[in-house]
Amino acid sequence: MNKPYIVCYMMTSVDGRIDCDMVGRLAGVEDYYPLLDELGLQSAISGKTTARLELAEPGEFMPENNLPFGKETVSKKAASSNGYTIVVDTKGTLLWKHDSQYEKPHILITSKQVSREYLIYLDEKNISYIVAGDAGIDLAAACEALKKNFGIEKLGIVGGPAINTAFLDEGLLDEVIVLIGAGIDGRASFPTVFQREDKGQAEPIPLKLIEARTYDSGAVFIRYKTR
Image (cartoon, rainbow, N blue to C red; front, top):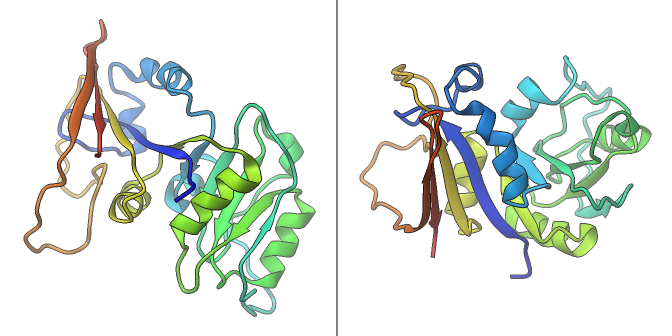
């Protein structure tokens, strides 16, 4: 598969929780973004939930006619040597400013279930998009398009448990990197880095440790290869 090199990079509490508000108060959070740049992850993907909280505008796109687009396509609006902000939005509901108002160009990844009206909306906002997959997004095809059409060689996955687990289960991750902040969350109902709905028996996915660091803040950086 001709895809970017893909790294899941997350900051967690000691007990593995990734709630955004909590993580923002952990000792060591100031190390997160410098490491993002150091790792060369200028292009990064967020899931819909993370994007709604941190990136998109308030509200939801409501098409007058919810006719699905029904085919795969790529629309490239801008080239960027400084990377892209990439968001997965299966049916196309997030709202955005005009793309010229952001530091980096956006790429929206959606499925054939996206409405024609939403793609017209993205065109009006000058936002690039990739349509790949039938009922859900074909992540492998989308990753190939990111490399072929946008020249992305290295890609960060910085979203929530759903998108992290989707990339893991599709065998698309090359590395998993966790920055563990010096603090404990303790709330059982809050998300972890990877999280499936099923509760059956599962074999652990083996990882190979390639690097570990500690910081004066008390944070610990752990880097693994998936294969």
